[in-house]
Image (cartoon, rainbow, N blue to C red; front, top):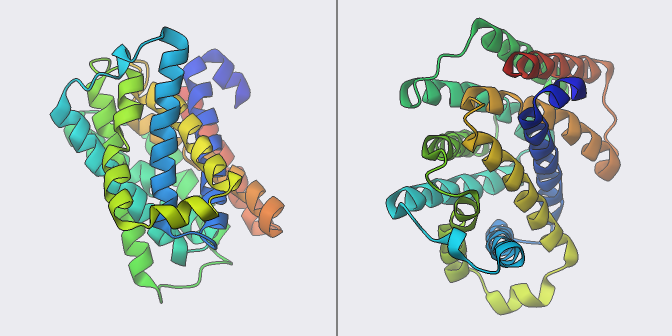
Length: 287
C-alpha cells in the first residue's frame, strides 16, 4: 500500500486523510459520553474556520484566498455539510463503532451511484470488484457484533449522512480549481457554526470544554486538508477516492483496541485482510 502511495503522492494524501478521519470518529464517539452532538459540531466548525484563517494569515499575511467566490456553490456545500455532520454524530449515539463502520462501507457505492450521473464517471470492473471485496470484509468485521435493526432509525440517519456526504464531495470535485482550497475548507462549516450556535448554551459549553474536544476538531481539520486536496485534483476520480474509505476501518479497529480494549476475532482479522486487499487494488489501479 505504501509502495503504491509513493508511486502516486495523491494516494498518500488520501490514505493519510482517512487515517486522521478514523481518529476523529473514535474521539467523537468517546466525547459523546460527555457532550451533546450539537456542541461537538459547533466546536469542530469553529476550530476548522479559525485554524484555516490562521494558516492563511501565517503563510500569506492576508485573507485574500478566503474570499467567498461562487457563493451559491459554497452555500450548497455548507448545507450538505450541515446535514451530513449532524446525521453522522446523531447516528453514532446509537450505533457501535462496528455498526457505524459497516454502514460506512456503503459510502463508495453511494458515491459511485451519484458520481456516474452527476460527474459522468465510469468506474472500471476492477473498482466494482474491489468494492465487493471491501463489502465482504466489512461483513466479516461486523458479523459478531451486529445488534440487529431494533434501533433502525439510527441506521436510516446514517444512510442519510452518507448521501449528503457524497453530494458534498461531488460538489468539491465539480468545483475543481475554481474555488481555492482554503476558501472551501473555511466556508464549508459555516451553516454548522450558525445553526448549532443558535441552539446550544455557549457559556455552559465554554465552562466544560476540554482539550480533547478541541483535539477531535483538529483531527478533522487535518483530514479535510488531505481529502479536499485529493478531491480537487484532476488526477483522481471521486469513486476511487471514496473507495479507499475501507482503510479507515483498519484504523478504527486499532483505535477500538487502544481505547475500549476490543480484540478482533479471527473472522474480523479475515475481514481486515480483505479490506486491505480491496484498498491495495484500488490504489494500484488509481496510480
